[in-house]
Length: 454
Ligand code: NAD
Image (cartoon, rainbow, N blue to C red; front, top):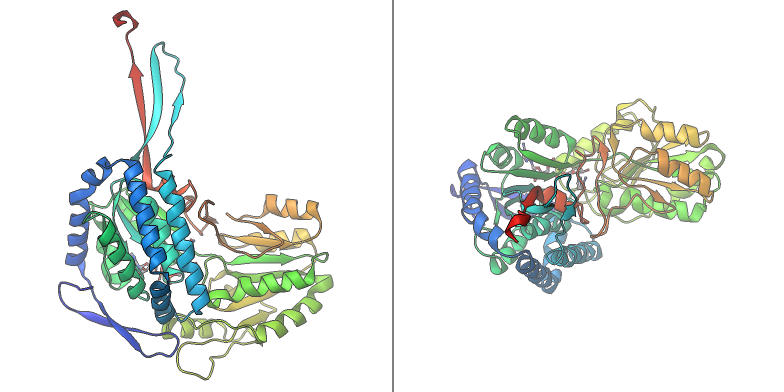
């Protein structure tokens, strides 16, 4: 892990604020070298059969499985999350590899009919080329897996840019790739987003920018990659809502609300940062939820800057529990529940990406849907109700890419597409076979035969 200039920056442990490591502060020349390395072998890699590429992805998944303990330890150190969560994330990344590997034996196209006699038409998937894969810190191993595995399976070569907050897991993932894949297929560039991101996004040698992160960075990427009409896939933030109806199983609704709001310290794009409760049960739900939140154990947030930003946004808010920095080293915020926030307040619309959720009181399902849909985002959503009709109406009318009935605002599994509407993304879906659409282009092949030659 080195930058050509030998410059570094310090990465600190969120759990105690101590120095974890020095990270290479790569610059535009390192980015250019990584893109050149990817470009140099792209055609060769695309010529390897999809079945063989799938076999190598399976090897990668197996190697990650073998190192799951080491990988999880690195993630614990660089994010501060509990070990069992980091291990579960390592396993999720491995499963993604197994799922994607199987696509090497499918990668299906289509055949169709034609108005012309003796003409056969089929569509085949072709690689996009060189891909820039830029990811967030929150679940680093799955974030690498969701992009790198389908990208290489589809015949692309890539430059992976891990978050500056998770350099060690990025380095380990890159090492496994370099041990198993031919040189140049996966290239890792460390560094600060504002320094290495722009040369990556703006390079005419990059055919696809696939990004997971904040809407602000996504907007910048879309504008700049858009100028050169590059393919861009953006998976962005959320202000996800979980609705609790008056006929819900309250125990279940409280448990799912806690996990949805506070697991991974609320640093999940799918976190429930708005909990929308029917008037009749609001007081009871609030009391039970706040009591349980007080003993909910979660990790620190990722950085001092993040903690300060969250605390600043809570100024003036009615905080039922939490809202304060814990008296210990590192960046710890107690699980925080806020109430009585006006629907049009900035806090109601902005993603905080921390262990903070807002309780809203609603009259009925119409009121709940109006509130839930009045958001710039539309990533995930959930409703708790025993009434099938109510649940199905919510499923139908909620503006979100994912909807869950009687569960949490949780994310995806490897075989399920994941993504959002409105400012949560640009219409692509990651994971599932849907990911193949991100990392391939369709080519339509027309075969016209001459029957007189038979
Ligand atoms: P971020 O936007 O600050 O950073 C994401 C990545 O972009 C990092 O690697 C960073 O170094 C890089 N970056 C920063 N500036 C850049 C630039 N100008 N050009 C190119 N790259 C640049 O986001 P974050 O704080 O790491 O992550 C939190 C956000 O990610 C939240 O909004 C969360 O909802 C979102 N997220 C979305 C999903 C999803 O699937 N929709 C999943 C996880 C996280």
